[in-house]
Amino acid sequence: MMEYPTPDRPPAASAEGERLQPAPDHAEEGLASATDDAIPTRSYAMLPMVGLGGSAGSLAALQGFFSAAPSDSGMAFVVVMHLSAEHESALAEIIQRTTAMPVLQVHDQAKVEANHVYVIAPGKTLTSID
Image (cartoon, rainbow, N blue to C red; front, top):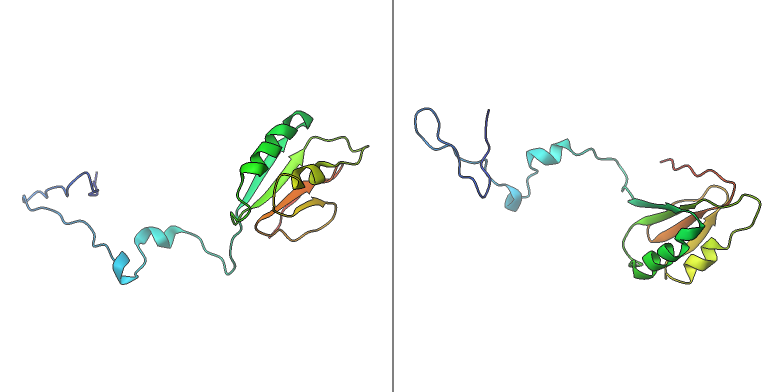
């Protein structure tokens, strides 16, 4: 088994007794490392989305979360609550009182943007496509 050197483990010795050298660090030269090649990329910026779910009893937790969450995190937040499809929901308005981010109740298609909160409307199914 090949062991690679790490900051806390020096290079291993070869069968001939010579020290194996760690791979050169090209970060200062602006070159990509081998691990960078393994990361898939797309032609557009990927947006981190955070999903939060719960029932009516989790309202206080959601309010606490959004009052502490920075409004410029670069993430989009999606709130999925177990709500009755027979009643209108004031969840978006309640969350809006606790954050500077725009809070939208999603009824139809909407473009997902960073630093926004999206609340699913009662009786709707939410799907994200890119």
